[in-house]
Length: 546
Image (cartoon, rainbow, N blue to C red; front, side):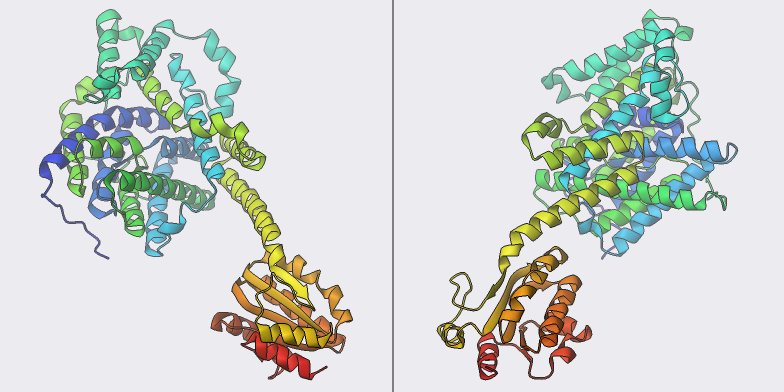
């Protein structure tokens, strides 16, 4: 796998337009996420530049635009809050170390070729935690929306302080925030197709705040120390290292999911196929460098990617062009950015939170199965009020248990114990003849399809029939998959039949199943004559024992 991407200039016109358009979309979001995270606007800008550059150069999705995203910002804000509480002096440096750890995890995930497995989780879980993150981002904007500094304590702290925030609300800032949201919602589609509404709101409402109100009446970004970023060396304490590694794993996994979902969207729009593992390595390098140089964590951004593709971007050159344009804009207009009202950025971030909410599932949740709805809302509430990793862990566990129970119930019909002809079991004429001639003395235990651990009880329920027959044939010839639990259940069936002095024959066709049963000692338990690879032969041997 080639590590560094070649910059292809065959589509340079489309890639330049795509990169410029994506840069215009990125600027207001980078500033909004930087402020929302608590790391400052510089961190948002550095994250947009560094992750965008390295993901474009090393990633596996040519049209993907990578930058700080809403979900990553939410987790980063929580990390910064926790690290500052644990170590006020080194908290910010420790938070950026968590970003580096997240990048390392992503590189490891890619190197282990886990890309295709990242999004293999139930949709109800993905929907729940994405909606939960959307609600967190919305709650985080309440204080700046009302013209005040965010209270400590995250979501619960903000909700507890809500009466005080409302009583001290600043009317001017509420007006600016509502104006920003109004522009984002109601900008005509014809205009949106030409100019991103985020840029219209950023420039338009900022001009209103400067021309209509005094500079001191409105809280603004203030001085932005944009220059060459300085290195933030990895910082940690022995007491916090476990927490930091866990936070890094959560951040890395969320970035993987975010990027893989966006890569699938890019594939659908361009009719191409991304390289999952390479993309994870590219994202990991981007986050590693961003954390090292004081930038926010990021991932593949749906909005930037779609805008890039619609404007003509088709190769990694568009991502590099976006970084160059964004860098020139930021370093050349840093003084103009300082007058942007915080309420405007709160409005932009709130719109991102609203877009993250999975409205399509929320609106239809009452029409789908009760367990999917329950899982979605449980994961959403756990994400908002407890912890993301707990939410995902509980959601995946419950969803998998329900699915396994359903699969087991549907597969139970594939375990049959018969002593006469059963039309549902595919028997040859010779096999039917043998069973008829045995007059009920041979019990054929027939299994088919994938046999997973949830079916062990269904197999054990056939044990009571063993006592009524003289010889038992266990047929695994049509089993496509057999796990360890079913292998043990087969072993217990053989043991029970042997203890009752019954003859037992086992039919196994696949080398994989035979090898598994040999390792577990089942073959030894049967003896040399007991293991055959043909059902007809097994029934003939069984008939000779009568």
